[in-house]
Image (tube, rainbow, N blue to C red):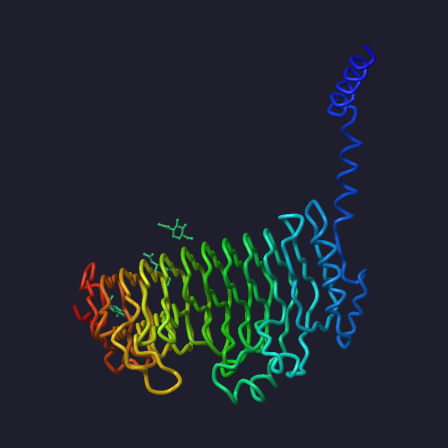
Length: 408
Ligand SMILES: *[C@@H]1O[C@H](CO)[C@@H](O)[C@H](O)[C@H]1NC(C)=O
Ligand SMILES: *[C@@H]1O[C@H](CO)[C@@H](O)[C@H](O)[C@H]1NC(C)=O
Ligand SMILES: *[C@@H]1O[C@H](CO)[C@@H](O)[C@H](O)[C@H]1NC(C)=O
C-alpha cells in the first residue's frame, strides 16, 4: 500500500511541474542558464594588451564552453588580443556552440612559430559539430613579413591559414573580416555542411598564396555575399568538393574563382555539382577558371558559372588542363575529365584578347561545354576578343547571343 501511495505522489509531482503556476520558475531557470553559458575570454585570463599571448585564455574559455550543455557562447569583447597558433578541439558536449567575436585578433609576427614546425594554421577548429563564428570582429594575420621572408623564397611553402576547419559539420562563418593572412585566409578541409555569409577578406594583390576561401574534401557548401580582394584565388575549390553553391561575390584584386588545381602529382580528383553565380570580378588575373595538372585522374562535372560581370580581367573564362606553375608540365596522357559545364550570362571586358580559352587535355577532351548569352570584349575597345578552343566540345544555346564567336 505504501508503494502505491509513493507512486501516486511521484506522478502528482511530475504532472504538477508542467502546470501553469510553475511556469515562471522554469523561465527564470532558463534565463540563469543562458547567462551562465557565456564564456568571456577576459574571465579566463586574457590580457587584451595586444602583446601578451592570449591563446591559453582563449583555449580555456573554449574548453569550458565545449564541455558545457545548452548553447554556449565564447565571447571575445571589442579589444585587441594577440593569439599564437591554437587548436579549438571538438567534439563538444553541445551541438550548438558559438564564438562571438567583437574584437580584433592579431597573429604573431614571429615567423618561426610556424615555419620551424611547418604548422599550417593560426586558428584551427577541429571536429566540432554545430559551430558558428560570427561578429564584426577582425582576424589580422599580419602576414607582411611572412610573404617576403618565408613564402616569397620558396614555392609550395606550408604556412598558416588564418581560419582552418577540419572534420567539422554544420559550420557557419558570418560577418567576420580576415585581413593579411600569412597564407590562406579561410580553409574548409573534410567538412560537411558549411555556410559562409557576409564575410570580408582583404590582402594586397601581390601577397603570395593568400587564397580567400579554399575548399577541399568538403560537401554541401553555401557561400553567399562575400567581398574578397587578395593575392591569390578569391575562392578555390579543390579535389573532393561536392554540392557547392556560391552566390554573390565581389572579387578583386586576386586570381578569380578557381576549380582546382586538380590532379597534382598524378592524383585522383573528383568534383561535382558546383554553381557559381552573381559574381563581379575587377582587375583580376582570371575570372572563372578550371585548372588541372597533366597526369591526374578523375573528373570535374556538373558545373555552372552564371550571371558574371568582368571588368578588366586577364583571362575571363578559362579551362587550363596544362597547369604547371613550377616548371615544365609532367608529360602524362591521363588527365582529369571535364564535362557538363555551363557558362551563362557572362558580360564585360577582358584585359587580354583571350576572352574565352578552353585549353582541354589531348587525351581526355572536355565534353558538354555549353555557352549561352556571353558578351565579352577587349577593354581597349579596339582589339577583337577571341574564343579559343583546344580539344573542347562546345555547344551554344543560341550562337547569335555569344560574342566572341564560339568555336563549335
Ligand atoms: C547540388 O548542390 C546544391 C547546393 O549544395 C544542392 O542544393 C543540390 O541538391 C545538389 N544537387 C544534386 C543533384 O545533388
Ligand atoms: C545577368 O547577370 C547580371 C549580373 O552580371 C544580372 O544582373 C542579370 O540579372 C542577369 N540576367 C539574367 C537574365 O539573369
Ligand atoms: C555586346 O555589348 C556591347 C556593348 O557593351 C553591344 O554593343 C553589343 O551589341 C553586345 N553584343 C551582343 C551580341 O549582345
